[in-house]
Length: 232
Length: 290
Image 1 (cartoon, helix red, strand yellow):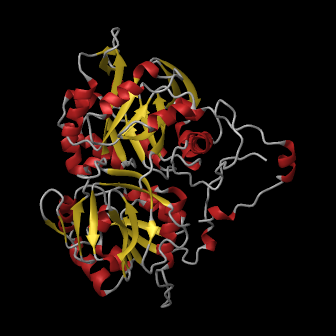
Image 2: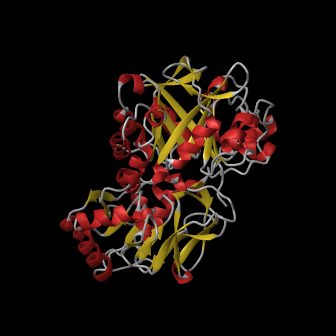
Image 3: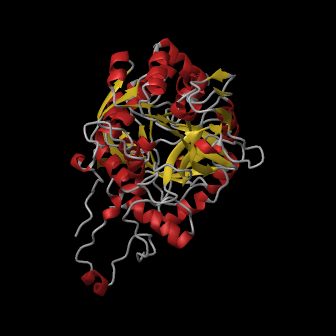
């Protein structure tokens, strides 16, 4: 019995939501290709786009993001994405997964390199991680165990305290009622948030090997198909 | 709490993954994409790919990044031949998560803030090669010239942090391929000078070398190139022995975790007792189903 290199490749037929049409928002920030690949591994039809009609046609959206908050908001405006996103997410209630900076954009504002307004979808502010007392390094980079909390099944496919990959200097400060995942880094910090169909993760599930794929699958399982919605 | 990382380094020379000795001798391993896939599936925490022929060729190896990022499910850093912030953006667009610069920073420190403007500072890693002069003092090593410079590594590290780099990648030139372990004194001196995360690389020949590196304050990742290409499941067995024998608190999430496995002095997995092997006709592991 030799342990040849075996991948944990999911069979598309095993996923109830195979063939889901997911659009990865392209606004010039972040590694959209990795996100697309992760979604495709899970059997989705994943398109990278900033086009209104494509976004309107999606069953779910992913907002990735790596970089600075201010530039991200500028790019969203420059590509005329603000209106279509507000409309699709807030009025049409399209499920959306925000990753890293993408999640931070859901906030009311950020103090990263000045004061910037965010999308304001989940009340909260993006603040710099405080390491004055702990003396810990910034950015917070590496694998950290996440404690699931609140009433979401987002972490239902992974055992408790599963590790995910983080790389950030700012964190999402918001009311506990929206927090579904936390980490410890000098203080308790938000790792994941949820408000109905709007989900955000501070870590990179597309870069967290199998654990990350399981989490993305949890999000996909929450997408309503033919009127029936499965709890996330 | 954040775990420290075990990072795999893939050194590429003229398109082939190689083992490196003394920054000058190279032995071919094979196709870099196979090595990346292997390290990834064995549970490595991060991968850095360094194309050592890129600078001389005149630019970054974008095709290599496209190829490797296809099968990499952990963060991938690319270094080699990056000259400008525009190069950095191209590399990230091609699929890398972070970029690494060495020469380019010493030539023009502005490349870091310029790159950070577009990509965010957490994407920028600056590589610092360290060597010791005859009198034992530390010096920054210039790989293009092939010799030590007059510059003090701790002072360069401070400038790297001040320029806004997200991480520092420290390579011990004298230890490259030596299996003598990291230069821990050098590591301590340089780490004490900065507050950004530091990765150590160069010289690992035994898991205890990783353990020693992990004990240094401010070290966020311990890396190796040659060491992780010798055996099947190198990453997994190394993490297992580090946890079992050295009490290192690393992430070990693969379903094959070698918990309770017997290890030899070298750190390699020992053969299980025949009686146990007889019981092990097959094992079913449903836990890794996505």
